[in-house]
Length: 197
Ligand code: G4P
Image 1 (cartoon, rainbow, N blue to C red):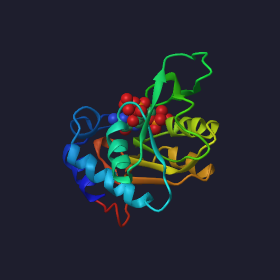
Image 2 (image 1 turned 45 degrees about the vertical axis):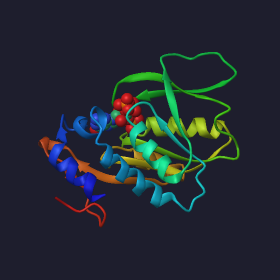
Image 3 (image 1 turned 60 degrees about the vertical axis):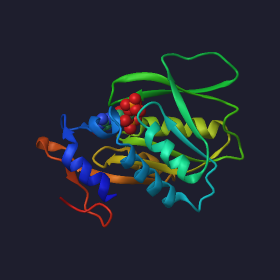
Image 4 (image 1 turned 135 degrees about the horizontal axis):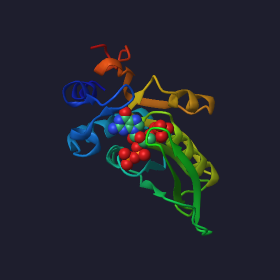
């Protein structure tokens, strides 16, 4: 999505070889018009797939997920992060190890919110090593729902999140694809929807 790529070029910055900071328009301050455009783009891509719910992970996935859910006219569910396992028959939980943030947590959903009649779209801000998305897939499958795909604002193609999804036969739709953050420089993948710098 050109609008997002242009914004990353103008306001994103490289923290280190692995981390892109987008605090002024996604992660801390949110550019609502940019999120609206992103949500419409994601919804348009998945519009014919019979999505019944959009699922995201707290917290930065909420803005693009909300806009996508609005455009698809379906509910949005936020998977919660708990520090430890809670024994409760109304909850489904799965442990996540975030390599990016070097933490473990339990991804949690109330089990009546998704069922076998649901066809779910997962929306998040970043795709890095894919641990969060893989955990979300485990929860959705545990609830007996099906998954249409995963949509992210920014995919870092030098990390292995997309191959993890591919192995499971899950489509990844990325609005911006970043090939490298080496030497303080943001390099985008070359593609029709993602032109070079
Ligand atoms: P992982 O397997 O390495 O854990 O990667 P994953 O894609 O699961 O992302 C883990 C968390 O790190 C996510 O935040 C994701 O948004 C964030 N993240 C990954 N790469 C980057 C990056 O280059 N820049 C920024 N700014 N964030 C990145 P989260 O756990 O969902 O938390 P929250 O930030 O949404 O609250």
